[in-house]
Image (cartoon, rainbow, N blue to C red; front, side, top):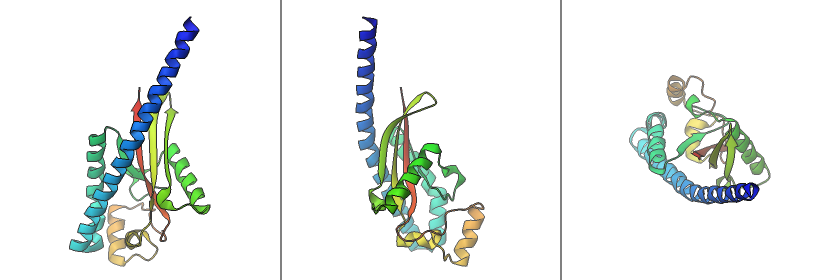
Length: 186
């Protein structure tokens, strides 16, 4: 009887996790869309009003607050990461690195960067987590600050704000990084 109750409890628990994962995936897609849209709008406004130097300030000052606001709204951690980071606060953990390498391999196999997406339930150090990542493609405008030919004034500002910057040398269509979401579940 105890075995039957244990199996029933395990089945119910797995079903609950699957349901929560499905809900997380739906909400996560909305959170990513909101984050990307808000950040893009802020960057476009900055580029129009003050050019690339102003846009760098948006990435430095505004992007973290956008991520924090969206994290609070949805109840899970929302951030950005990359294999080539600019801000050390955005360093990828082991799971994120693995997914970023999978994204790179998928890109090499011909998949479009904008379609690269993963959502899964994982267990890390005994904690059950829901994790999600969506690749960020490098657009033409990104190359102003993330490409190989960066104007001297822009490079000076980047050096000032990000002395250990690795986020340059990208080409159009490269994987610039990814939106990353994380939720710990009971």
